[in-house]
Length: 89
Length: 149
Image (cartoon, each protein chain N blue to C red):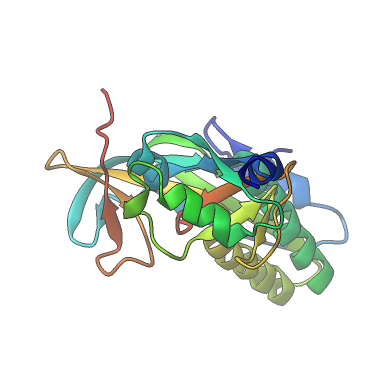
């Protein structure tokens, strides 16, 4: 069973910016997600990484170039990004 | 024309992009680097962006404004290190009459500030630095990495 679960899991790349990148010391991290996993699962995965505990529980998340909700499904080809509060202008 | 630029922004270029014989009203907005933020003296700042998404979001905002009002919009936001007084963002809105130009210009800057993934790191006269965070109680969040000079 464990082997099957491992096969069903896939890597998801997550981009980090600004203060979030500083907290984790990286601008790109990879988390493993089970088939059927959601944006919320990816966020949990990033928050479990070293330094990730300082990230807020609720963050803006983008898939590609659009924001996504926490309950949306994530597939192997998706590239997610955690977005700190916008401060342009 | 890219919405994000690393070179100085020139409003004349944006005005020229929205001028036409049938547009008799051009409203412009310039956001420049202030020398103070929440009581602290700002020396300089650095903008960082998630460029592909920022470009896409700017395009969506411009399209929204141009569908809501009979206007043509030109928009640029500078990225990188800026000094006090530098232009960070510039908008030109051209239309037949002033009301639409003012309304569309205001719409674009307000939407940009809330939707476009751009972040601002300020460096203060006392040597400290902070990320501007409009959602934080004090308006900023501390940095964990110092900029190397």
